[in-house]
View 1 (cartoon, rainbow, N blue to C red):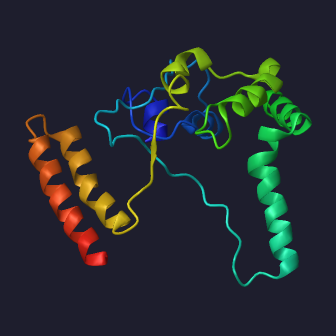
View 2: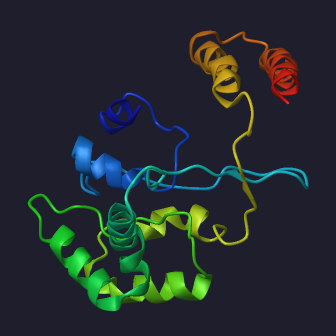
Length: 197
């Protein structure tokens, strides 16, 4: 999907907010060669929200105490320190911005800390931000107010498997009955979830 989007084969797709970084790193996207925007999907109804996901940062249960300590230190360094330590944030941003080609600095991600801390950490790297934040306001304006909905705890992959053919049908069949396909997939998914309970 990323390579097709970067090549201009289609105009939009659904992904995580931080996908711009991957587009820059892996597909050579820059603000000069791609008009890019980011927004939150519309939410309707009181039980709607944005799908939570992300990368697991875990330590094997059989690890030694020393390995666990080292792993936690690495997780803290890799994922958290640039959000709470100004020196680390600036050093990381400077290195990324000075690469040839420059890497993305300032891509919005689903925040794990408060809005104040997010804005503070962004202010630390302001001189190095090189992503089109003004084109991402549709997301950043609501990222602190959108409810985060976790993936289904049961039959998750099976549910995704039911949804994949629907996405393909929408892309290939202009006359697809989307409402019926979604209704059928919902019933099948709920049956799988009930079985797994």
